[in-house]
Image 1 (spheres, each protein chain N blue to C red):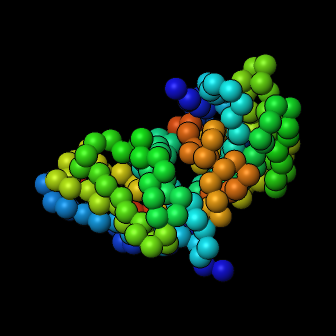
Image 2: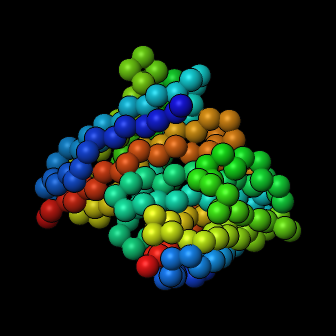
Image 3: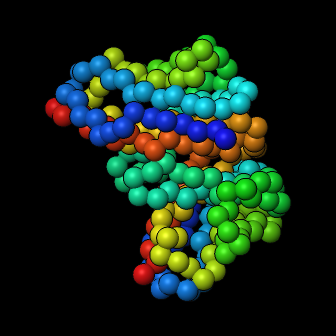
Length: 115
Length: 111
């Protein structure tokens, strides 16, 4: 079946611009996670959704970052007033439910470059 | 807070060599532990996991044992292949499975 998909695969934007990154989880998965991976580092947690609600947004670095999942499926990560330090690969993962018994399936990521 | 420390890379081995990638963690309570792998050009995939102390996770010839006394989850394989070349990430999770990753170890296997 189809895995987690993310669009766009690459995004180049100018400092100060607004960007949206999209994640399509595996059908039926209720839990959805966003991570950010800087060059040479492991992924860092940003936010996780259980259904439509953000159950834990403790990893969002500041109020320029926001994510939504209005219908409990597709999620969009929104970054306002982008800065060069936001350049990274943004990863999305989904799992059937939240909890250590459930594997997280990762998408290929969106590489964001802020110039 | 929770954290994971991995053996620094890159690691280069010859085919059929024995592999160990060290991983230690800091956490309160009893986290679940994972190894994820990222093959060239592909997304992160779960390689193996262990959810309680003394559990051994295994997959594709790789093994790791959850050692609470040493807070470790070292990855081992008895005989590596060229196809094992990838970046390996150790990770932990507590509660709702928010993953905390190590920095990754790049492994290259030469024929």
